[in-house]
Image 1 (cartoon, one colour):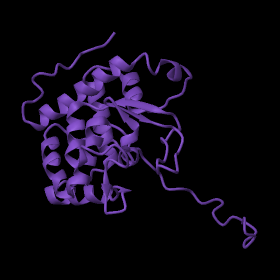
Image 2: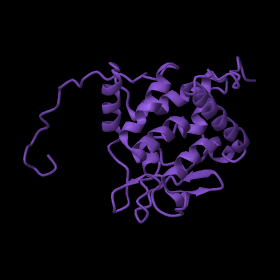
Image 3: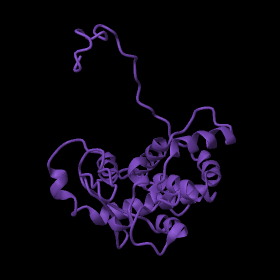
Length: 227
């Protein structure tokens, strides 16, 4: 219609397909299986998938993580795109600062611990950000015989459920995953919550690693409620 090739929209009156939000999360017993299977995707893709699971950040943002945005363990994601650096901006356009637990920093160091610039997860000689994470997950699901397929975003959802199961609450979950529900208070409270956010990131990563290690998270206490 914009090109004036047709005079009427042929889609008027056509009902769209019903869509349902996914609820897939990895169970406690699935976590060790997937963690081991991640390595079949190669070092870089495996590392990126592990970081998504351990931090709960969006797959597209993790794949474009840059060394320049990481200072003293904090990863700061500008809300706006930076085309010069190849940073796409956050999904909701809001800048986000997230603590990277020690296990995450160790995973990143195994790739190229001496780098201070460029993408953290890169493949090929051109330094492009890692891709094909969804394809890698499909291959992993097939190999370990999982019927209900798991996507990279489901790893983020798995992390989010751990935040609430450890008793930190929905507000905390939204805060550390940069899930914006509205309200200008988020902007002003961002730095005030940094000590708590750091604790949340460390606790959730420790719980996931404990489950992967088969200890059941004996050293991580799940809270019944948070005042």
